[in-house]
Length: 188
Image (cartoon, rainbow, N blue to C red):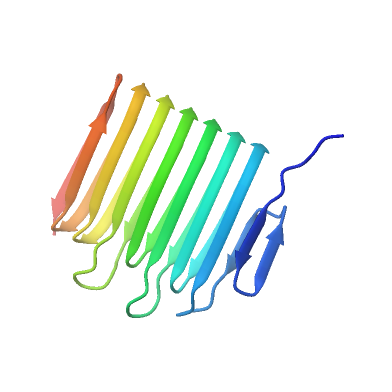
C-alpha cells in the first residue's frame, strides 16, 4: 500500500489537508502556517496578510514552496523559516513589509527566488540563507531601507544573484566550491 504524504496547514479559521494551497489571515491579525512534508512531489502554497509566521519543512524529491506574505498594520512583521532537503527543490518567497527570512536548503538542484519589499520608513528586512549540495541557485532581491542579506553556499556549482535597491544596505556572502555571484546594490 502506497502511503501519501500528509499536508496540514493551519491559518486562522482555515485548515487544509493534502490540498497544498492555503490562503488566509485577516488584515492586521496574526496569521500562522506550519507545514511538515516528507516524500516525493510535495507542494505547498501559502498566502498570508497581517502579522505572519510561516514554518515550512520539506524532505524528499521535486518539492515546491510558494509563499506570499503581505504585512499590514503598524508594528506588524512577517517571518518565514524554510527548511528544504532533497533533490530538485524550488521555493518562491515574496514578502511585502517588515520581514525576516531564514532559509536552509540542502541537496542537489535546489532553487530559491526570494523578494522582499517595503517596510515602513526605517524598518529593515533580512535574509539568512544557507544552501549546501550541488547545483544550487539563489536569486535574492530587496527593495527599501536598512536591508541585509547573509548568504552561505557550500559544495559544487553554486550560483547567486543578489539585487538590493535602497539605503543602508548590507550583504555578507560566503561561497565554497565553484561558485559564481552577481551582486547589484543601488543607493536610492
